[in-house]
Length: 207
Image 1 (cartoon, rainbow, N blue to C red):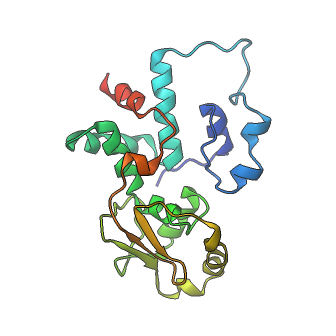
Image 2 (image 1 turned 90 degrees about the vertical axis):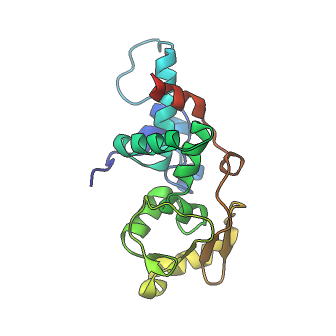
Image 3 (image 1 turned 90 degrees about the horizontal axis):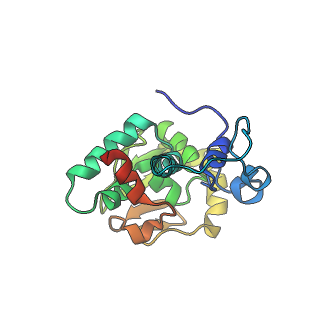
């Protein structure tokens, strides 16, 4: 499976915004705070981005944040277009419903990349069945728990110790003793609190 293998801090510098791709490390040791310029050779004065350039940047921000490649992101956008309602909001909801994102939102991982690895390694059960598909979409009433012997791993013990300081969004519920999460309802755009212009993403694919 194709994946991005370069330094993720370059993505934040390229986007000009802190995308929290390393979780807690982004708070204390953020490269963007030291080097705010985009990576690569600096060609004198920076040119103003065109409207198309701004749309591309916003699209890349969303894609980098959720850690998915262009082909999968485009397929997700196409699915959002097919649904009734506002395409941009549908897109955000679909991205938030991904299993790796839900594991991250529950506080069971420090970043979405780490959450994806936890899922791919088979440590997570969805409704009592092992699920190693990070892009699997959860629905209302779904239960996310640890799989079998995964509760005996060192990683589980670390999560159990640090989970008390982490907040969980209102559309999810977490049993902090058993580390079992539940989807109370589907997320809304207000729950997501997106910091990018999702309308620009829709305009980018509408051309």
